[in-house]
Image (tube, rainbow, N blue to C red):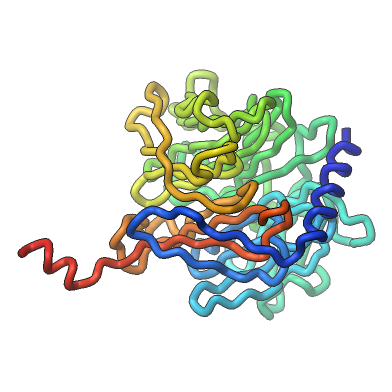
Length: 373
């Protein structure tokens, strides 16, 4: 089965090289938000992560198939710097487990490189020069488990927030894979800041299994997990995972399909939740908005919810969405609010050389005064 993924990767690389340097843009955004763009200097490959200690620092994977790199974006001055030159085979997920560290989920292998491929990597800036390019700064964090017949298919990654959400120890690494055939998994790796301490929880197994393809995941304010998936028919779903007994995995009565595939014909590429418990999914229908939103239900194990249009782009396929803070507000009118970051392919199926951003537009003081007149 590996050859099928190689062929698909080659096709994307050829398409990307034919339209290198193309960009994406918003075509519709909600009122009360400011849109902008970040120039990456090379094509975006799909993975994003934010430094939890500083929401201005966002990591993104760039490059082309089997020649991926990682850049660090500083939103305070819009600068972009390469911090992991690689080369990596295919970065599916990124996460920041601690200061001066980065986890890279690499689901392919760049053969000429000495960096391990098709595994979970830990990058540590040991000499504190701002990158992970010195010898010994990139090592295997932990080898993947439950690998399907088509080899490792690691996808989106996040770090569990404080408060032991759903019984998951704070600071743990979570990542998805995309094995298909109802064999997709969501994994938990505890103590991911060192290969000596990292361990799957539960040992040798996944936290949740049974979906087809990854579609991102995030935590709400109560620590419940909401996960996007895409099935074999390329319809999407949002699953709520609520670990009632706080054990090491999600049991059959601890998940619910809160958004069914009947409303998501374009599948789901990624998912994010803001500080006000509004969920956002990146979906790619043949028509209609690509970024859609939903309200987190009060009882997600027994309730469903509906999607609403939020924003649209000229991209033929969006791949990623991220909110750079779970503490800052994302409501219209908020000052110093969170930033939504969106990435994908440019028209013509080139890897877009930019990321799109949306941020709440502060309400002018004169408008606030008008409310009381």
